Amino acid sequence: MSIISEFKEFALKGNVMDLAIGVIIGGAFGKIIDSMVKDIMMPIISFILGGEVDFKDMFIVLGNNPNNIQSLKAAQEAGLNVLAYGNFITIAINFLLLAMVVFMMVKGMNSMRRKKEAEPEAPAATPEDIELLREIRDQLKNRP
Image (tube, rainbow, N blue to C red; front, side, top):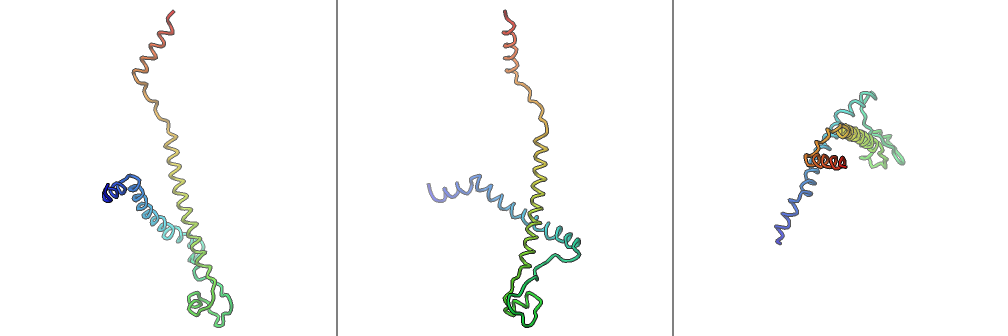
């Protein structure tokens, strides 16, 4: 088997194609979730808290701050040793919101799936040959 035919067999297998489709849809889905957090949820939270929810400029100067610098960018440009914890807080909040949105979507999908599974199915009609065998059985039981 040539290398080209082996590669074609590998690339065209169902599992590889399913994986590729899953990655593409997953990337698009990630953009939707990211937009939902940034464009919908964060503005609502900012409104509730009465301002911008952005902790990126929160920091602590480790050591001396001789010029009493108050912004993170200026402190980093001045070469001060800073503990910039604010960006971590912002990313952690974004992660929690993202996880909540994904959880709610999965919960909704599972709820819809359970409803679909809970719907009673109409009993299947008994095949004609089974009915005939039952009639024969009943007649044999009634014989003396």
